[in-house]
Image 1 (cartoon, helix red, strand yellow):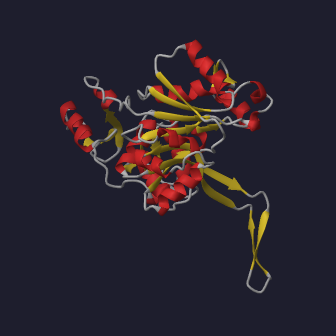
Image 2 (tube, rainbow, N blue to C red):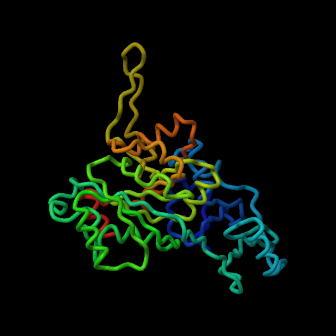
Image 3 (cartoon, helix red, strand yellow):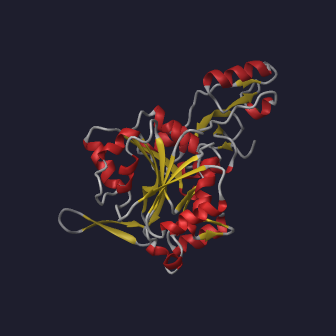
Length: 348
């Protein structure tokens, strides 16, 4: 219980970290007497962030103050199950006659029936694996970046495993630099999943080679860089994309930057207005993981250097809808440069 109970003064950033550490997708908001004030889900946090709430602000404007509850000893397992199913909830808090939290019920707790995990077995995954990986030299002078090892397996296997966990089994690797080595690796390991190679004969940027996949897919699909490992729920990402009716969804990390100095604010007369001591700024940083609708690929020009940022801008000009799926900074590992690579070795 203590792992999922929080107070109102907890910040958005702290809440994201608590949610990442617990197996549940919902936190219980309580007062100092353990009275239930409401619930806070990852969806609540995403909506708050996208509405402009700062990561350093508390959750008072973000949590659900009117949650579904059960009263201790006044419900059956079948009633709880039906509420979870009908309302599509991950858990329901159980309170006593004084509205104090005593426990909660979820699918696992009901024992006789476990909520099925969403599987995305027929959803394709595109991995952009053609770059030179210059930030990882001298390793990449010999190995292609996707095969640089982290512990006992290459980067690309860590990435693929995340998708295998949700049932994906159809992988499309866009290859160029040292592409023959990548092909030889997969021929040697002979994986149980499908791997299709798309050859990029000259550098086409971070999205140019997607042109070769036009008309290949009939449903939204994942696109990921080959130098990022993200420990988030990919099923939630895919559901977010579909429910939001987005054409493109990009995953963004919640980053906090602190200027280690007092910054001077100047007034219109050029005089000092005030000094802001060590100001903090919040940003959402694009991490290189996307969900795309198939028709977006028609915007990618043929055999032209073209980046994902250009695709996003062109999609917006066409009136297409672009969504942002925020994640906590701790679940994103960028292994594309040496300093982050060393952290990844320690964390994975």
